[in-house]
Image (cartoon, rainbow, N blue to C red; front, side, top):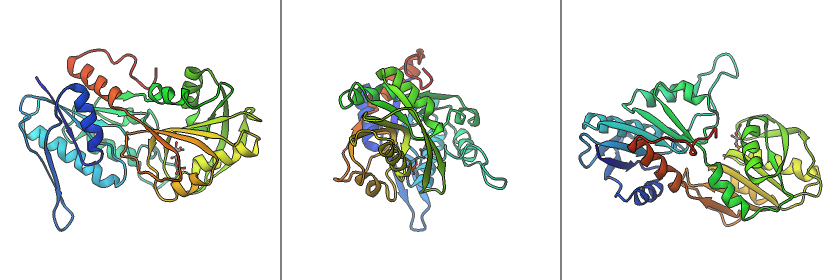
Amino acid sequence: MSLKVFSGAANPGLGRRVSARLGINDGNVSIKAFPDGELHVEVQESVRGQDVFLIQPTGPPVERRLLELVMLADACRRAGASRVSAVIPYFGYARQDRRATGREAVGARVVANMISSSGVDRVVCVDLHTPSIEGLCSVPVEHLGATPVIADALREVIDNDAVMVSPDLGAVKLAERYARRLGLNEAVIYKVRVSGEDVRTRSVLGDVRDRPVVIVDDMISTGGTVAAAAEAMLEAGCKPDIVVAATHGLFVGPAFERLSNLPLRQVVVTDSLDVPSDSRVPVRVCGLDGLLSEAISRLHNGRSMHGLLARE
Ligand code: R5P
């Protein structure tokens, strides 16, 4: 069974870099929209009997990227692929993994069902918002961790006395992993979400006075969480020279505006998404091509995933 990699339209550059590392060309696909908006998806080379990996983060526009992915999976399955793996470096809807109020949909479950029933045999993803997504998918999930990749970039910009800050209770375990890897102390902020765009901080646990801080999170969406965390840190007396790290850089809505008003030394993200840029914010993008190509190579060859997983 030979190896084949296809990219959807979400981040073809990442797909090409992963394929190059694997020493293959990524496969040709055609993704078009009819005038009424319906998608038409076609793989343009044979996949019969092959081990296919589809690389497609489901970031904005989320519904479109999701549909491209499941239609690609369907196309490969119908064209006779022996195995289809969906490599989803950023998994959209992961924040809707439970009902917060009584009458809302569990969006992550709906999306997991769509992906699981599209013909994929396995999902590969990176730093999920919550590991509970694995339980929502009815196919096996390989949950990779980008902490080592980002920590290497952080080593180049942080000071030895920096404090690793979790901007909310949900990011505590992630911050712990970074703190352990980089040998730093930790602080935690108690955050309350007011709306999709706005958050408030209530209190800070840990001492950051006169120390540089590194705020870590799984994603930066509108930048509200990072901005509120940075303001709480400045109020608590940290040095006005803040580093931010997040696996997924969505940077939607007011994100760049908010970040540009903060004293930031650097914002480190990965290329799980095709990261937009803004000259006002010093963003550094770390490549996931090494991690993803290693994961694909091991899965293709039936080797252990030890050392690549988020929980390690
Ligand atoms: C929430 O729990 C997540 O981990 C992030 O903190 C949040 O989704 C980031 O979104 P925003 O940048 O819009 O605050």
